[in-house]
Image 1 (tube, rainbow, N blue to C red):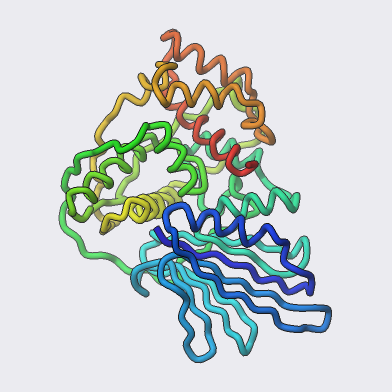
Image 2: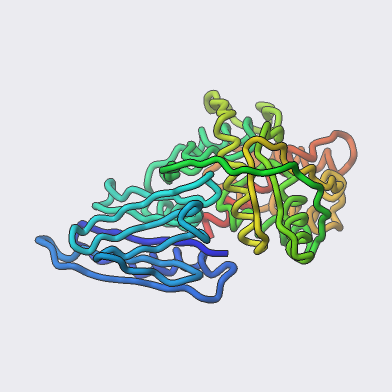
Length: 357
């Protein structure tokens, strides 16, 4: 799994010592090899600082431009170009949108920006800087839609880089892919939250991870689609979510989020992936997620109980912990069926704990 990150600080002050290490932690999730370019240029009020980080192949230099990429080729990648002569940083994405790129504007605390393939480290730094967020609106939006909108309120003040150019892949029909579980569902779920850098309510992503892993083990490529993504979660009741305004429904954003999810999963597993917007997704292998969450002895059930009992997981969220625990208890007793809601809440709480860690 590759990725890029970086810091541009133009206010003359030093770069906080922990910022590069926060960005590097995500790059080291699946790669033991990282690279780093760093330079300081004297300016009127101090120094301009530029740091470029990445995993996989190292940076290149062409005509005075430092270039780093996240992607196998120019047609499907996220990139950062540092122009050493003009002192300009250019960020972008190309292709169908499988390679994510996020950035954080530092205007409110100085001058400059940070960028990363994963929003998690940027959220950590934004939390450290006490930057204003739209977390309450974002939680309501996520629980209504079932996913975190790219550039939406949940990730604020983080922005998602738009796609510069888009091309259509030519593909044939989808085929079924078997699934294989290499570790516990709970460990895989926590890993998914980490590598995506955001919560998700689509429990079939776990199945998708196992399907991709099985394809990798068999040495076959995966052909998947994003046409008519159907995963969604019904709006939560007011006894779970405190009233915080109406979340906007962004159907068009779901396909964009799905492309990123597929790309991140495939790269994490190490399987070759071809995505078509004109094809239905690979049918998931349906696992008994609801039953796993109902059983406190299972890895997912144990994780849900532990997380719902943790006060820190609810810190800053417009969610009532007692109501969530009551929801889980009713599900585990078999009184009511709340598997999808519990799963959506669980990934949200795991994400929040990782941001605050």
